[in-house]
Length: 431
Image (cartoon, rainbow, N blue to C red; front, side, top):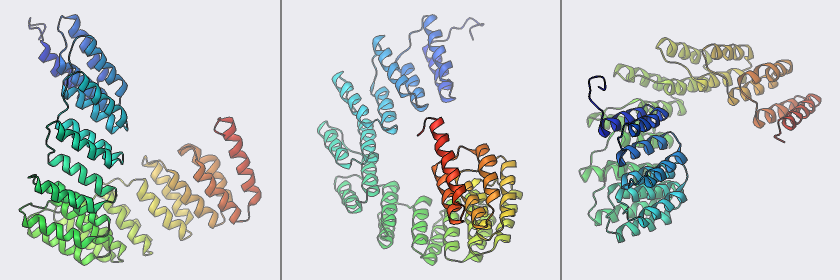
């Protein structure tokens, strides 16, 4: 562009800076700002808002705030969008008090918060567990002439539901309706989820019927919430009925739907039906994921079918699905509980060769298994040679090991280990 005699303008620079920020190249974006300045192009409010957003998205809140001060000192006036970006980031990173201070600053500078500003703050207070302050903000926005919208109500209803006040959430639903705000599918999904989590499955089902009668179409999320709720409360048949209902209404189940149902069947002892669901989802074109297989592997293991669980491990691999550390932990746990330490150790080497590093759960499983099977020498090798390669052992690992050694009559080894742990902590300055 430059070689052809065309000079980029501020709009061109803003597009380039935005692209760099979105691809995580914040430093290059900052260099480009200096380039545009040196070429006589003055950054504008859009330039600074893009940069502030980029810094915020990469967790650099302090640098974003520095940019706010820089733009002001250079005579560029931030707008409500600039402030909303910063307020949102502060709220998401636990800085609700700083966000409130920033709102007061923008007001004192003559910038009026908008509905988006208030929704961000209300959401921040709700997530911080301060519903009372969130309600005060609603009154403030109303007094300033801003009408709460469906997003505002959804935030409040979600906050109340998550803090166990499902009755107040229901009252708020009626309030929003009386004020002429139509609830949407998100509103109902929040309330249905709240009722399910509080064991009120019948009331959750009533909400499904209410939303339908009011002309609000449930979506796959609605059905997934209800299916999960029914399965959790042992109502597997009703969960299966919901699957048929959603299909008949033209809602396509997804992997989450099937995972909930497969988990429900496994927990209900119906492994055969769980496997049938796996075949159904595949035949319908839904690809199982690692969670699907982890549920089935755990189900087979809990019913003593270790060999069938191992077959599932091979099946998922042949389908191009990579097992994760959870998959291996499930299998190792059951192998250790059945005294098959050799196979458990083979799995440890397999997971490592596949690039999965054992975690604290893996180590605790192996320590438990080895100690209960009297393999104290193997435990020593595990602690001295293997675990330090995987991760730095923590208090849980050592506590578990000391308890197991004592239970196996190895009190002197337990004392020796405790002494070495304390000495190591002193050397590292952790004691």
